[in-house]
Image (tube, rainbow, N blue to C red):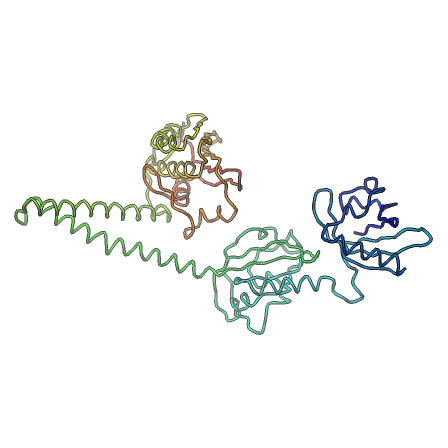
Length: 450
């Protein structure tokens, strides 16, 4: 983009090219008669004045960099050339949004080098690639992860390093659309023939005006190891804690019944206290095991026709205390639809979502519950006016290692476990949320036959 203008000795615009609107969102009619300094960035004003004075007295072209503040308040860098014309008795000015490179010179070299310097200091795998998919630069972290050594990744196509599904003949964003601004789990082969799981994503960026792709690669081996350790702990709880505690509890109960002799009053009180503690420990263990079953999907269902509206109202009544404590306005609308569900399991879903909505709703705000007849399915939406979530927070909800536990009246659950239950019923579940705009957790379930 190039804008040409002429200004008088005081900087007042005498004429300017019509493409000024395209460059600065300011039309020629708006600019003629105004001072050119009115649209320049304040911090650059001094250097602009000095350049114009130099061009006026030296009678030679003067080049300088000075930013322009557009009408929409966006600041854009411009590279100016100023030349005084005695014939016109005016200063001719040419503003460009980039510097024209000398023959054979890379105009984006400095910007790319700056980006490379920054990428080297970030402790994760990063690479830059051109729009045709060729890797331009990969930082040391990624080189170590891929075990390339001196071979490097430069000059290789993205899809030859990462197993991407790219259409033949496609280019640019159309070729990589499925991976832009998304996280994809994949397994890659390192230079030493070792297969590792990674999380891969691409983002479209501009490096000094040059469109490129910024790739992010995170090794998820550690996450898989944490998941394995978690399951090992669950298994040990089942075998090494639950069974021995049950045996101890049975022995104490028999002792209290006099099978092993009579206890005095003090002994009975102590035995009853121990028995109560063991009951609570077993209940906690059962809760851990139940949540694990829900998250892994290894549970059975006892389905029957149930009125979805009645179940929602029952769950809301159970949370009435929490709703009143936060002075929430509750609204529930929709038809009474019959769904084929396991009543107990579905109650876990509803209680988890209600607890989540109440927890994040501001004091005195509204929580709306909507039942929708969606053909052969019933859709339920639970909408709050909370702080909303980022894309990363939404991803964490359904990540076994990152999602938070939500507790409330009627038991403990997680959003991930709730989705597992809904999917086990043949339904689906999701969330619509934006920061500052609240959240809408929804799920759909098959309707019962007429």
